[in-house]
Length: 236
Image 1 (cartoon, helix red, strand yellow):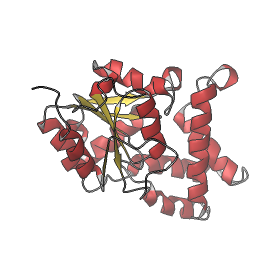
Image 2 (cartoon, helix red, strand yellow):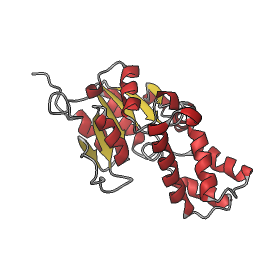
Image 3 (tube, helix red, strand yellow):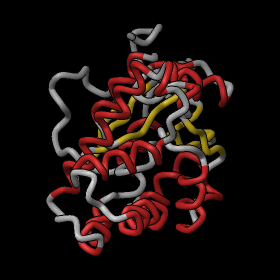
Image 4 (cartoon, rainbow, N blue to C red):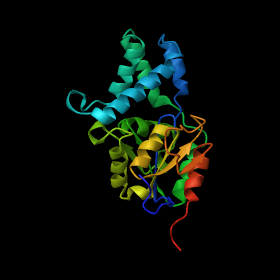
């Protein structure tokens, strides 16, 4: 969806993706090793996790309605191990999600947005418990005004409804809300909902060619936020 003015303006609020954007998943590798799951399967697990989340974004009705992010995490673990993973090992991987550390520039990126007067929030397909624990553990919670959850009943990302609901929750029009993410698919979803999009290249390296380019891109979160803050305000 193109921006109404034809050019994105500096946003009034900012939402940041959580997993692999603010908090890298790479440290989970040792949890996989301890669980007896080959570390090479972690990428396969991540792909399964995204696949099932996307499917729920399109088809979350009937028997699948109400599935939680943890359901999807555990289901993906069982799938990649042929349902051979022990319950305690499965629990250890899931618990590891709440013990991730933030990217080194996460605090400075959040602080820059707050000091510029932007309302800040996080938005993920998980409920609000996981990001709140991660942010509190990292000392970042005071820099985040709202912890939003794209719960199944409110639409999974990258469904446009998830992003529009975030805009309504923050009290801003979609074109005045910016998403910061390390995922090209997340940019595509937010862009289709009319949000301003900021992409950090720290995860994917190159932006996926199948999607429309983000409004702003940067080498990391701080550079991406700085680019969003540098957009024109629209005021004379």
